[in-house]
Image (cartoon, rainbow, N blue to C red; front, side, top):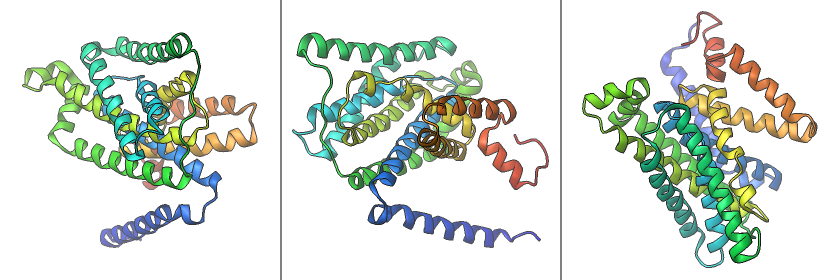
Length: 312
């Protein structure tokens, strides 16, 4: 028997309210272990949604996430004891945004694999530049950022995540989102009908970088020690792309599903199979991409429809 649409909406609203209450009150009863897990989960959610809003829509595969994230971490490490935390997070976001603007002006006329290689090289160059500066100018490697209670970081990351979802949703439903999809489908045609494709790409690219930088500034407060290798780790560039593809690149729900599933399976495999988890992890990713090209979202949709038909 089919459930009436009004009843379904009320049920989803009720479930959403319960989940919201559960998440908001989590620091009141959860241990530090679970708070750290959720902090990492929020980090990946923000990175993935920010990345996919630009790259998943335009087709420009950016591997510069580590650069924006690392800038935010170093802002906290340098200014942590000099400024209030909210201002540090804002500066971390602005640092990522300004760097993305510069990178965007230099690179967003490049397309395809060349853009991906350029952005990856950008992250790696910044990592080695910071390492050179610390080694040769400051004669020390690494920094010790300020420590903040896990619950405080939890709420800050939750706020950034909500902001990320709202911003991405508004962009996707607006004329700008339509223009971005036009760029992804046929950039020359979008340019010919009057869309300023370069400005639009740069602004979207920089907006995502702001959120990544703010996230890096917050996550740094959970680290006892950071250096250029850990702050600008390529892991932060590749994981958002993998999570979005794994969940389903076409939808925001897919980005969220991919981030949540990756975070959970990574935590389980690291604790139970510390020496083999990367191998198992890689096999899972390959299987999903080969047999479920629409990602987890496609699997969920197929299951919801009773297994009938091909998921678009």
